[in-house]
Amino acid sequence: MRGSCTYDPHAEEALRLHLGGMDDTDGKHPHWGDFDLHVGEQVVMSIHDDRNGDVPIERRGLTRDETQIEKKIYVRKMAKEFGWTIVEDAS
Image (tube, one colour):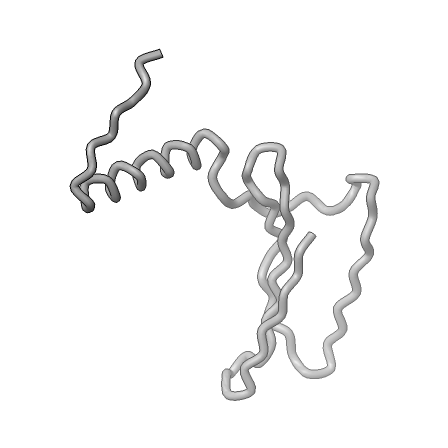
């Protein structure tokens, strides 16, 4: 699980909490939400290792297959930009 807070004293909402996690099983990461916090509010978290926590509201990111496709697109784009020729293995 990952949580991060940002603070901007000039913003209308001075503190924002992002609550998400990392999951290597499929490349998509759980996201529990983004929360605007106000002076006097308390945040209480309980960390468990039994996988019985709250279900995330969504899962973000690319799967491994989608990541592989995006990498190939990027490499081909860079090869074209540099004038390189890509030779793919026939096997």
